[in-house]
Amino acid sequence: MKSSPFNEQVDLIIVGAGMVGLCLAAALRLQGLKILIVEREESAPFISLGYDCRVSAIVAANIEMFQAIGVWERLQTVASPIHTMRIWDNQHAGGIRFDAEEIKKTALGYLIENSKMQEAMKLTLLQDVNIELYYPAVIQSWQRNNGKLQVRFEDGRVVETPLLVGADGANSWVRSNAEIHLYEHDMHQKGIVANIRTQLPHQNSAYQRFLPTGPLAFLPMINGMISIVWSAQTEEADRLMQLDDIGFIESLNLAMGPVLGRVTEVGQRAAFPLKTRLAAHMIRPNIALIGDAAHTIHPLAGLGVNLGLRDAMILGREILDAIRFKEDYGSSEILSRLIAQRVPDILTVMASMEGLNHIYTSQLPGMPLLRGLGMRMVGNSGIIKQMLMQHSTGLSLPVPKQLEA
Image (cartoon, rainbow, N blue to C red):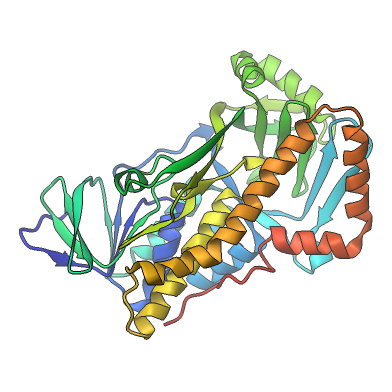
């Protein structure tokens, strides 16, 4: 930790040393920018059966980005490929299978523990003398001066920058102190996460069953482990969390069925409320929000962190383009380019997740039949299915895999 009586100058301050903030720094690290990454405190992983309970399914396009920015070599041994994904609508007829071979890829994506991603990115960043990881550190205040932001920390350090990026999560301090309003929709559900073992090997397949109370997903981890994400109405989720391990395993077996035999062991569980959040503004002069600080979505397709990674790459490209043309990348005019490129993707994914959750938890007469017909139509239509897979894996989106000055 440093302390300085005079103003330091950096090209970028990133608040939040999570996956999205670290990704932005890693993508920019070869461009000679002086970057300060600020974190209030390090969060310990939530361990379940020896592995982090918090995992992310990183889609194929973002894996290509990890390769390009130099972090994949540290992740490939701890990442589990997802070759196929099978989806059912409860016990009703109709289902769909997505296979990576259909889009000529070896994997639809990879399941990786969040703590492992953060560790890999930090190790990559520590190689660069222009990047400082600064924690524990608390911002006391900021003020604008001659088109830049002067940021004062509680230890007396003052740093000046053209741009401060809020990548500090759903309860973003940056968003709050920038007085950016937050639109929030409570889904009245909780997401239960845990790691489990099953009788049969997962063979790198993901499984998702839509239940009347919410979706249940089995996601393949390394060494045969499986991560579950069980979204259920709050009352039902609370009931499931109160069960002992034997009772919870029995409920899991009843809910998912025998696709992998029986669940034989479950680790420590955690539950969190599910809310859709959208910041009214992603930018202010000299300030930009990315990742969960700007938006959170339903976890049913595991796309939340992927949206944030796309935010980081688009913002990084706009910063470098502005530098190339000698523009002020902290100005609202330049930062508005971020909004123009990201909002359509964010709103599309948000609406899709909310819509799917509503459709598959609806008990209106005839809905199970319509859902089954819809699944069969998508499954039997090669072109529509491939387009859906290309979009959901991010391969059809105009997001850079690597940033170059």
